[in-house]
Length: 545
Image (cartoon, rainbow, N blue to C red; front, side, top):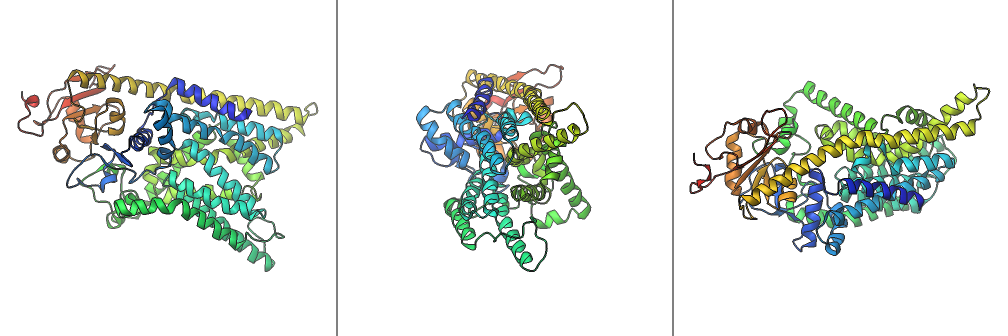
């Protein structure tokens, strides 16, 4: 209970500092939850990326659209009851994520104690998970971080118990993996890990009977029962089958952006939000092996960098490596090693272009609880080795001192990493509230549609529906604006489609009028934010000289 309170208090402080969603994922989950609570079902009044509508201009081009063609619904489904009861407020959206995420700290303590770790390891690892250094700033965001930090380690814990002979725990892992598959697309990798662990354990048992070494170096235990695997699969399907049925009925595919090639076969990240690009296997292979290999390696490097910063806050990295080396044969950690391999393989082979944009941040966070335990064990091993060579060191006391110091550094790093991010979010929030006021002064009707790079965020702050500015030539942007009857264009200097650069610099086509509102930049260059009228109808006088 104390660990839960500490974790929730940290998240409450973050909410007090910045209560609103801060980036596209969060805006999207909040909007879907509010739509459900308002009785409009799974829909959103904006197109956040054109991959969600098949990388084309739909005919007819309508808003709102069915939601969750790419992102999955669990975070929104959990928010919806809170929004229904408390109203469409930032607190209603953030509260379920804060409550669920706070469970990760006591869960880490239970996992550590169950695998035989000392109390100092369990306590320290749980505090690190409660205030996870570089990742702390995301902990109050109304999205999937809290879900990943609970569902992933809980599933891996159940798998470890299954390897130790608890068939019921292994079956429960199927249910938890199903919930994770409803939270994120890469949740299917967790389900794959469940299957991988069962198959590897069967292989171990077969090799054991033939007198060979097994994968986990334990030869005298029976394999996970087939019945447990069948029940795990059944529970997984019970969770995901209704959602798959909805996706088939709505989009014709259980994973629309994967089936279209928009998620898997893009050659660069610009194609993710393009109307003219038609990603597919043929165009992907046409790049040639050198380009494909380079993009895969870039994805792996980016994933490793994110892991080092987000999971270890850099500080824990050497201790984690020691702990991994020491525990490499432990049955309790085999599922974690298997899952780490699977997610890094996914980041390298399946979605490397999405890794730098934030996809792997959400994946890596699920590795944190076990990584914290391994880091504390690695630290104590190093302290014990040094104490054995120092006459006046008492190992137990030295261990507690060093563990406390490292935990304190991790907590301090949450400020170092978090303050710049919070300032960036606050600056963007202030700019968008000014933009909302400018639209009010312009007497823009509530149904006026806005073209922007972040239509979810613009909709959250202004209340206006919108469409993403595609990464295409200006003629295609005009076609999008015409199809959707767009009335306004918002350009933000720090996040800009290539075709919009000249407009922000002052060179405009005839269908875009002079800016009605700008926020000047501190360096005297192009504005930080600018609002333009868009005149796709000949009768619209706002763009005339």
